[in-house]
Length: 165
Image (cartoon, rainbow, N blue to C red; front, side):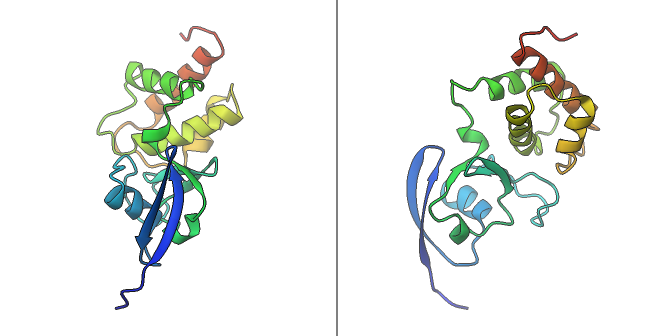
């Protein structure tokens, strides 16, 4: 087993950090283990469940599939960093997830929120079918997805200035 490490510098949630990591270290492990950003959950570790979804340079990615060295120089945003007051999307989603009972155990929630934030930034008024399609890469074992679709639709309506039913 090699003890080789490399320096990785990235901007995480607005703060620049340089970490020494083994070349095989996944971004999710760096975020959780080194930086304490435990909102990045590890589920399947194969990129299938979506629990580790983060933003890398503005687009969602599975942190369990990205090596930390691949993120050198990147801007990474985790669910903990989605608090920009200038973008009310996350706040609307959080409120709708609570109101629509779209969280139960909470394990999938950070990945669902990141996926939903990206969807609503790209498509402010998505159809229910578009919402289902976008979140199809995120597993939820508790809610059956209906409440999550309701919550994302509710947030979209609120952000558009309409009061949801």
